[in-house]
Image (cartoon, rainbow, N blue to C red; front, side, top):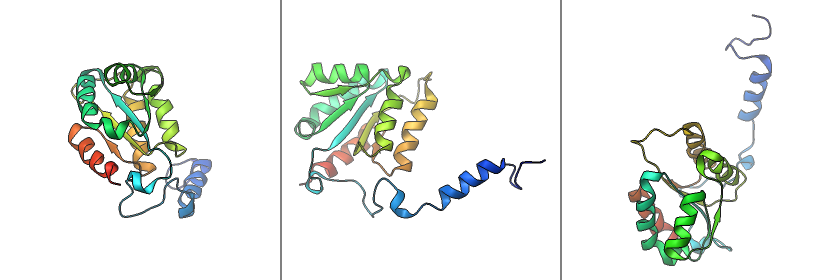
Length: 168
């Protein structure tokens, strides 16, 4: 078919794909290293963390963050709408509140991640409940993978990250 490459992509998509493959390693937002999870001792500024929880996991987020309070009080925090309100109310934390996830909060946090304005994400997902904004959720997790950012999607992994982040 005219205008398509041998792989079935339109010519302009082929060139975009080729350009993406040719980016120098310096074009990545984060340096590549064996352990790309920063600790406070490695940062000259407060750590920037996003805290997100689906409705069925909000109580777990409140309990988890109660154990993290000394760490979280030293961080710049952002969260999706209701999660941020509950964290501020339960623990007195200062939290930059984004929109609710289904209303664009997932996308707002993803944008911050993409431009290097986040050091990590704790995202307690509810895998047993269908989410109407699943594409946005997948995009956020993919963003962590693309930009090599630490992302905990369950309590056990969040506790491991807390251990690393707390190192001085």
